[in-house]
Length: 114
Image 1 (spheres, rainbow, N blue to C red):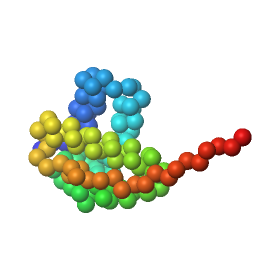
Image 2: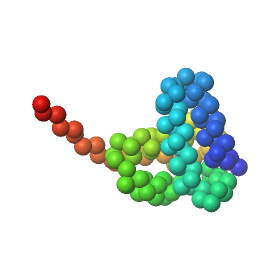
Image 3: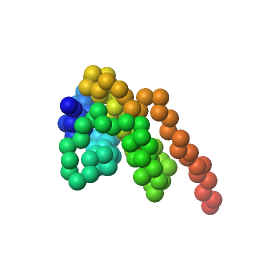
Image 4: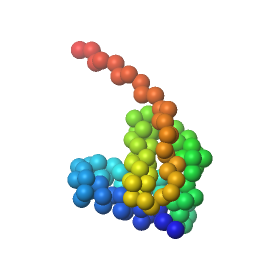
């Protein structure tokens, strides 16, 4: 049984020391994945990664509707990166984010006038 919190810690370690990502990027990943962890494991339960499936990811995506589209995409990209890492390391058998498209449209920003 692979616990979500342990997997997130391993992923953040990988990002910080092996991939040498920016401190800001690692901090954003940490915050986004902590929110995902709170969503999947309410009331402080230990979450098993094997219980996370596409239906749970759809619910999580719906729970992000009050954020701006760019923030929604960033949060979902963090989750996809986590599961990609876990799949490469052989810690999960089935990646629920594989072939999962982010159907969040970004609007165009209009140029500012003087």
